[in-house]
Image (cartoon, rainbow, N blue to C red; front, side):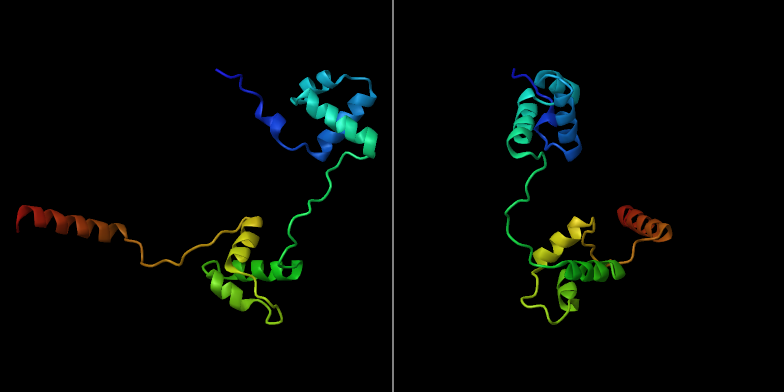
Length: 149
């Protein structure tokens, strides 16, 4: 059976942890000792230290991914519409965006922007929930059907 490693060491280092690594290395700690202290691999510590020595920085560079389709103003407009009417559909949010926007962000983009701030789509209620009285009436009706009355 393979040895289970600490899952935390595979996560990204935070800027705070990177700063701690540099501080401890400058204080004379070994890579292995720092790794054990922080619950990380000694190779993670070594790579962080090497980056500090060669580049003079420990933070990650910004990714070169695809540019965002919406700007901050449009993101705020999406959030405003979604919070003012929680059961609003993605298509109606799309229609409420400023008309000067071309091309209009897709529904998937709007869904992503809402997910980023912790909102999710809600469907409007299709029917009224049954009250306890209605439930009892339905049970009584079902019992009458079984008795053959």
